[in-house]
Length: 190
Image 1 (cartoon, rainbow, N blue to C red):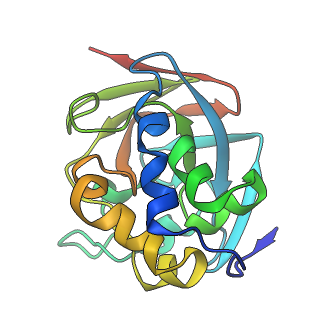
Image 2 (cartoon, rainbow, N blue to C red):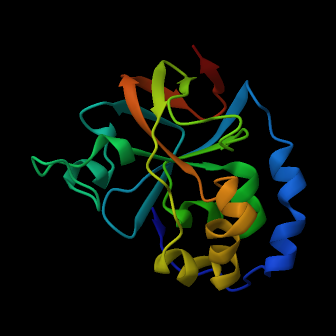
């Protein structure tokens, strides 16, 4: 289990901006699932090799199913923020080594272009035996993101080009239950 603690060296805005061409050079299709993280409780991170994703529970074992910041009219966790997804290339630019990636709080880290031009809301993804639908809900860095990665990182993902490219990541909801594993191919489906 990874404890959530800030990274000591925060990258500057200029260092992060230099990474944009590398981030944008990610696969447009046939990407790769690089990391899966379950958040059993708030402020806890558990990197795993495989996970079951379901419409009812999201990432099985993740605290999303217990309630989150966005709820339905019935008070249930909103499916539009069920699965948090971030670009592996972007989190590597921000956090460095993979052992730091879980601090971002995302469930899936994929090496694929997450920009709206490549993956607009409504895009369907196949990963392992799971199918996800990318939702419209914006994914933004917050105070916790600043605390863990520094103010420059939050400004980088939340404003200007970073915001336009959705460098903080995207949300998906499960439309076909199944299992994902690190190394699985991530494909856009029609």
